[in-house]
Image (cartoon, rainbow, N blue to C red; front, side, top):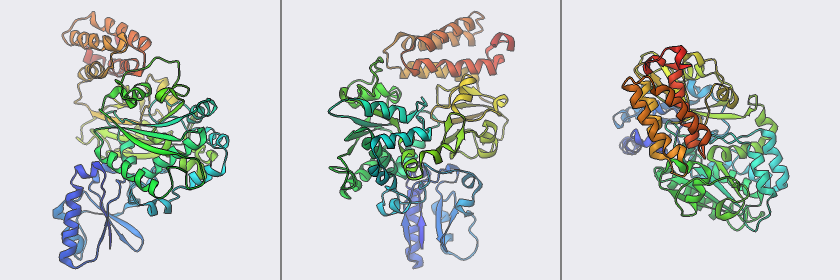
Length: 507
């Protein structure tokens, strides 16, 4: 009997380790021969710990499980937590899983499991192509940065490939700091070899022989899993002195950051990677030309790099068939906040916001009316019911004064205090600013003060707040200060009455 119990941090936080121990104990008492496999999560967090049992090649789910629910697994009759075939659960069945195809299905540290699911096939193809051909496949795919900026991945690679240097680097930005975002962590813990393969392909394409994965210290499970995966891949001869015994050298190292939000910005990350204070660098020079240790560097997000193996196996044109407009491929949507079905949902760009919140997310967990959803992290704009027809893609959200960012969606019901949430955006920026530029460092503090004046009923404060937001947006050195006005302005626009304004005044 094969039983899967997730080892992912989210599942562990819900008691998965205790459930696994209870299964081992119950199996011993029943005399049943059981193989317990610690997989990654499927991403249906409201069902964690989700236990799966294989019968006739089909995996049946039970959840959310507690240790007290375990003995019934070994008894005849229906289990009260039975969910049926896992892949027929509507939340999962509606997905288009490309990047997360293996996540939750396999043992994350089993090379045999990874190889059985197209693992290393992308790298093998890249070894048969020239670097230019690999880059062209990525350009054809339309893959853009999944970390927030949305810059075309293939163009960045092409720039690094064309740079002359004795050393080049691949840096994975795994500093996932957005509230409501967990896709990077889920991938690193549930399918780490996919990330390693994507980085190796990138190194081969641009001529880099060294890669760094920059992970925040708050992700201990991911750090352990990545280090174990690197060790296994190196021992198998897949990375190290030669790629799969036939290509050039490419090795990997995990670097742990202290958890500063600003280190999600690529130049701050590079400073931290080099052992310096995490502060934004002025551009130019671009990291693609002078990045880590002054050398040409590809800096990509976890999800961008993890999408590459599928693209190399199936072709850039096949990946580009998914999506909408200039937003091609699939996007792992992370649904959180006051929502019934929180979790990760991978689909092609283009799903409407209303479908995501009401059908996929199931509406609010409280049962109260929906009020707003913040999209793109703590610096993303708020969107109300009037935006439910908005398709999830880069251009549509930009046209509405918002951003997709890392595709985190945090849902709020009608009890949310929008003035308090607007103030929180300014407070967050004040706390997390690196201090490099005045509009961000000082502007966020003035923003908190001005919103306190709004709360106190000062009619002149709103005009001052709008002026301050304009200065921060246009004058900040990076997106930290530049995006902070997004949640503030959108909260005022959507809910002017909470700022003691008429709709006309808010607009």
